[in-house]
Amino acid sequence: MPLRAHLSELRNRLVKAGIAIILGAILGWFLYKFLYDALQHPLKVASAETGTEVKLNFTDPTGAFNLQLKLAMYTGIVVASPVWLYQLWAFILPGLTKKERNYALGFSFAAVVLFLGGLGLAWMVLPNAMVFFAGFVPDGSVSFNTVDAYFSFVTRLLLSFGISFVVPLVLVGMNMMGMVSARALAKGWRVAVFTCFLFAAMASPTAEVSMMFLLALPMIGLYLVALGIAWFVDRRRARRADALGEDEASEIDAPEAIDGPEQL
Figure 1 (cartoon, rainbow, N blue to C red):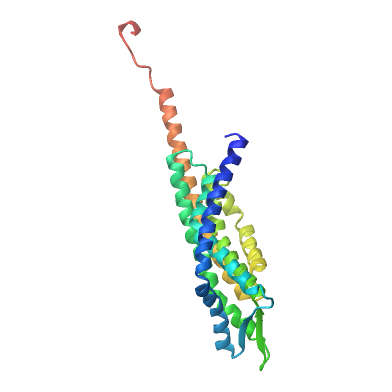
Figure 2: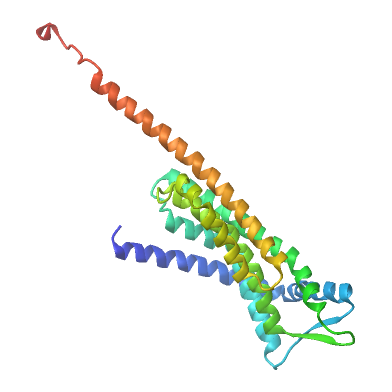
């Protein structure tokens, strides 16, 4: 397609993704009380484990409204993840054929599962992180956390885990498009491991080493899974190329057919 057609397709897919996120945000607006209670759960766990009172603090009159708006928007992003992830894969892997559309659907489904899996793991880690930080509060003190700082801490943790779980799927997509081979991924395993730990150290909201390992090790495991899938794809592609080469060779070596007695 020409550049204008690509830009038009990108615009249409962004509009569809935006509509899905807005509809999800409307749902999140009405689920605010449930979401706020869930957001306070790690603080309650920290209070029970350490004996230190850990609470949220609204520092300005618009704090509660801004929190409800942010929770609604992030809920929309999570709820609409099947839609915008499909739009992303459909744009990267153009659905020109039925087979390619099936690939896009498969990639979007796997991306949703991995993204939600990363969010789930981050949510399991969050109470331990709050317990760790609350343990440094002196006895007799109260830990007041501003809503903005705590919400930024939580969303950074959730998104870093969710996005990191989707990155190996991007490698698989690049391999299927022929942009990178399994051999190249295998040769670069040292760089990949270093990058996983570097990303985990930068994305982790805490300075705790165990938090970095909790993020880096699943990423390394998913990288190995992506390497295995890329190896399988490359082997299948090589077998098809060999079969095609044998067919062409047999056509060249085959004697010409005799149409009639004139050719004898």
